[in-house]
Length: 389
Image (tube, rainbow, N blue to C red; front, side, top):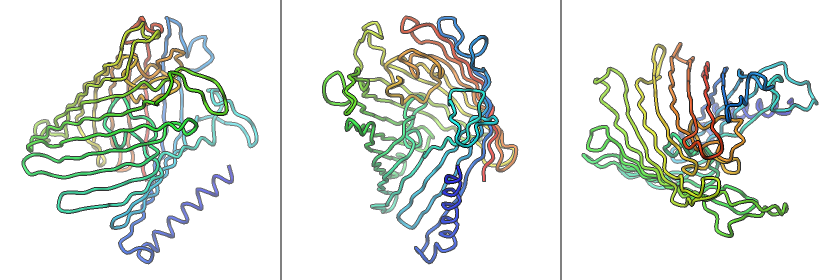
């Protein structure tokens, strides 16, 4: 832990020094250091075939408390940029002393050293002329930060990312994002993804987007991990298209920033398998609306959406999980943990101060097809205080 603290302090010192000397290093360079401190409370209920998976007689509490810190470091010049983000997400509690081994599933023991590298990327502008711009980025980012979806793109994007944007008068703002990223280095597995969109079509606030992601891995229907020799069923039968459309209303209509949206997605590679009763369960959708926007103290926002995600619509298995939606909870033993559900989510945010937000989120789901796996219900209330610095 002392080593970790030393690394953090060293990184902060280097960034602070770079901020002071930015003009000497690169003309026009800018260094930004920021972060968040979060305190989170969750109350969960999960049932599987009528049996509780948490709470009651099960030795796992319904209530969870986390403390989290995010640190960001960003460096930008006239035509290059780079950034990193470190996340420290720990269970609360007294915790173990130095040298003790901690069972991460033990809800009664605090955790002190859970660190996640969420971002580590750099980019360069290749071309910029008028409203046209072409950029390239390398490294790690978060999939849902660069591609649009409420139910997928939850994986890390470790690879290369190309961005093109242009604006056409009286038509709209066009963009194209294309990239490839590592899935599994052991078996040389890469995924490919792209998204195109047209925003503010004909100055109406209407937008449309289309994305496609290919998780497929060429070869036999089973994969053998090198050096392990264990054959497993190929979990990578996902080639997903998603159509998204929305409308950003004039703020004067409801006296607040308002957007309504919806999406339809389908997995082209899906086939009927034993787990889905030999039927394809590959088409999903969601609808939602958001009112309000958080900028300063006193601001608020409320968002509601409904999701219907069949078993094969998005990768939601233990082997490959790219699902970002409500899901079925963390304790399901079924193959489809992040899919085969239908449910809704309500999210409210309040800015108590310019740098202090309160977020309240409620979500509930049940099995989309009760003949797959077992009947399940999942509910979660999350309350989180977020201090930004």
